[in-house]
Amino acid sequence: MKPNSKAEAIVSWILAFVIPAALFFGIFYGLGDGTLRWWINSLFISGFSVLLVLGQVFIHRTGTFDILIFGFYRLFESWRNPVEKKYDTASDYHSAMDAKRQKNKPYFLPFVVISTPLLIASLVLLLIENSLVG
Image 1 (cartoon, one colour):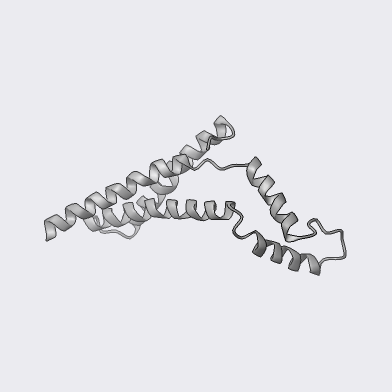
Image 2: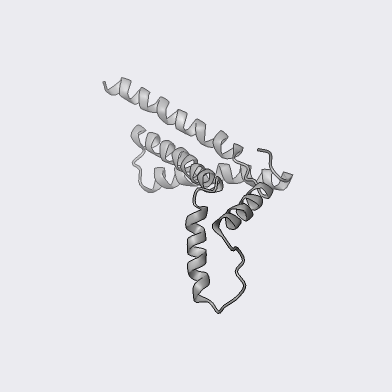
């Protein structure tokens, strides 16, 4: 998917670099002891956590949880004063959310491009460590 604007692309690339870097340095310097094992752990956790969040966002954007969210929407709506309901059925809610998702698509490419080399570097360092130890 392409970004909606150039500013969105720039922000996505900056966030794609800053988030894994913050995770890496926080884990490596905050918890680590500087060994090769901590390099491996820091690289893996920072790369995998970004891909995990992207997977969750992707699953949410497919509409998997629309019925559950609609149920909570109806529950909280029942506690308010009688007002006109925004969505009559779960199908109406799902259609409205689909239209909203089509209009505002996220730009995932920078996150995948940054986190994949972190996972590969972690795997390579793990293989090196195992060959040195074993």
